[in-house]
Image (cartoon, rainbow, N blue to C red):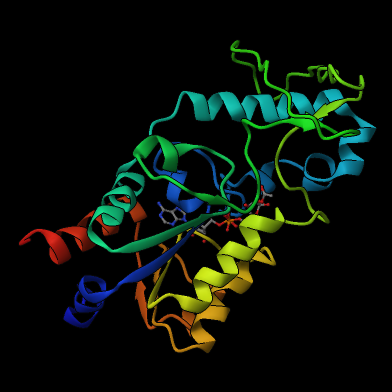
Length: 251
Ligand code: OAD
């Protein structure tokens, strides 16, 4: 049951911030990180696969794993959560979409100007000079495939995945824009994130401190339950279309 107060807030909001996490892509068949049994960090070792030391210790293991993930995303389609967020942007005067996801499913659903806090599977770069690398293979690979990373055409350094690893800074511009949006919005929605990774998890607190109402959409409890004025328990691909329908179907 979606409260009338929430529908009203959504209809009146002049600036909505949406922060998404892996849960928004779950219904597209992309695994989350921390869900029991299916989460990537339940089945793979983050200390090997999600930090620079791990990459330098075994580049072929790490490059092969990210290529597997990239191909999974290539073969996935945006789900109703992604498409509803893109539709909301047409109804609300200003919508800032911030994602922790490294897939491009928001963009493929029609969202523009997505702030990617954790980088992208599609933007690898040289580990030494930072030059972008563009010639990614089209051939699908398995999760255990060992593939040597390519070498940079500028300095011959190793090419690394374009995602933010543990211990690394978030892209400064995207982070600053995200903070600013959370401090100036009228309403914030948190969709499909466990809130366990900082500094991204700080964003809802910035908004809440300024009395911005927070809406959370997630099938399970998270640390954001305490600050969320509205906790909508369930799948994003089911709840978001219902919200949209109730708020905007009569317009
Ligand atoms: P997590 O795997 O930590 O959390 C996913 C959240 O999505 C959980 O709270 C689930 O309950 C929820 N969820 C699952 N299915 C859902 C559905 N259908 N609809 C809505 N919610 C659903 O993923 P993140 O919070 O995104 O970092 O993880 C944050 C970061 O940790 C990731 O960006 C990644 C990882 O290490 C990098 O890749 C740099």
